[in-house]
Image 1 (spheres, rainbow, N blue to C red):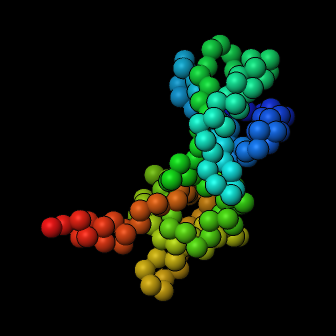
Image 2 (cartoon, one colour; image 1 turned 45 degrees about the vertical axis):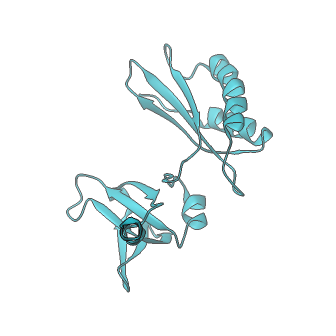
Length: 166
């Protein structure tokens, strides 16, 4: 399946910026018969509103219709990154250093397919996490499927369950 060209991505990013939000990602997902163009928006000082998504959606729809990035019809989805946002680029890894993350590894990875810890950063082709109290792991980027924020790290989940018990 085709993706979004750099030229179109730049136009979409400028469009989002004109509405006061940042284009975090533009992805083509779904099947070849029913592709979805997903635009992920954020605002560094806070989240995006439904109104932000609606404004960008209306303008992006016109731009995408004119640009025609995919053969045939597609669905446009404009969304916020959510609590468990995916980390896409170096800016994200820098911005969220010190936060809890979940890293899903590719099937070829020989170790645990899900690694959780505190993000140290992304450097020298690896994602670095602190796991446990003092252990640091480096996960090769080529083996990483995706990295997402973990809004409810295991310690917090355990604490909240215990707190809610009678």
